[in-house]
Length: 95
Length: 274
Image (tube, helix red, strand yellow):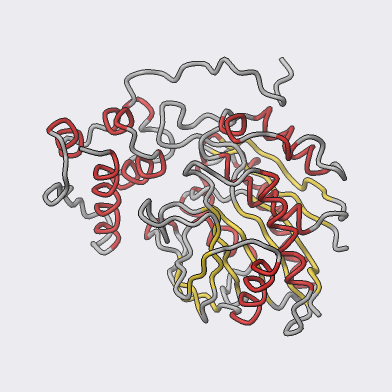
């Protein structure tokens, strides 16, 4: 329905985890949000790549991955497509 | 009136507290040595309060209501919110008189920050604050900036805001010795396919610009270009704000380490008092 609803769902999930005992894995609650079937599936399955492609903010994705037990950059393989090389040249590039 | 007796900016990767030993020991030792230098400065200069600027991480705000800047006015600030951070959660004393003076000064200068009497301090503040004062008793004014949700303050706007913060601190009659700290950056990528990358070239260039009296062309950089150094790199707005508050002061990079295990360009830059 809207990426806002997906992001609200992830945000609320992370808030719920703050109140839960450490390391407790709570299933994400998708009831009460206006979600399409695709959005709901991405949330229930914890499909990080799909959440990224839907437009969920990277800070929320990072928090979600941390809550899933990923540390540092070890969730990088969850993204199916590598980032495209930026075509714009920056002022700090020397080579 | 208060003096800003010390000012610095430092990176705030969560792993520096949660798992510091994951970094190559030599890199971690050099980074923490720089933080030890500023901690000793704070003790020698008998700092009475610290004003710290950091980025928002959806800790205090969400997309339904997200200010570009918010000043914490509370008597105390709970933090850190992250249970896994390795820093015991506590209530850090606030400095409401100083915080109110900063907010009033900002408004007088034409800025319109939000205010909070119940600000929560996340890793963005607490990693750097804990290194500054492990006893966590130093009165603290948190200022949170939106650094990741577009449209964002430009770097020039952040610098101008910092000028206003510095002016307000120096006009405050209630304290004599205040520290100003920027927390965030340097380059990092999170929650996206490049997570873990560090743009070392950007980091070294950025630090070199801050060391220039006129900041080079740093303030002319638009947000799209800044984002090419990483989607978390916008937190350098806090560093630019501190540079604005300390305009005219000599800046010296105490340390730079690209610590890939912490997925963050780590560094510390310090300003001589004016």
